[in-house]
Length: 210
Image (cartoon, rainbow, N blue to C red; front, side, top):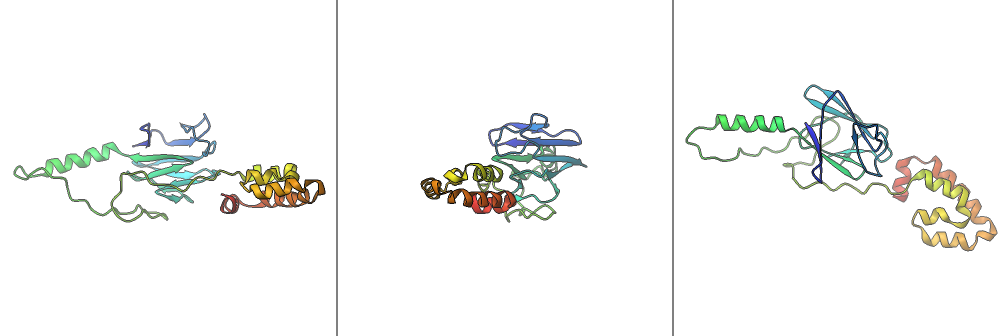
């Protein structure tokens, strides 16, 4: 079993535990600014691996669904980490299937591919879209580009001149804060906003500001 990226890089899966993330200490290191230092973990169970998210900032996705608990990988699953897509392949199983089909075919039968059965979703809380797997990579929602902690600190220390509003792509409000900064009112408002940002969950912040 191995993981393959969209640009063709392959990561063979060996061992009982395989860590994935941006840090150099991982077994699979990703050059992806949207990936956490230690983003996800693969744990071997029998002939396959079970994937879990390691409390990453932007989450781990399998077949377009965000992962909230352990998930047993199947061939053709697509893992999304930050902006990186990793497709699960199992060449040994595919080769075995081809061998069974070839050995079982009668001598007089014309060569033809076996009929395609509808794709059955793997067990677990996440459902794969109905229908055969499409070879085109799925489109994931854009990973969050704004950091809650950064926005909160900018609001607390530079909010009086609207820097946090420019950071959150609210340029109009940023200009108003800058124009009225001499009144100290924007600074007070920004201080309250900074506390709100820091006490939000990441999910609440990203739903509001992206």
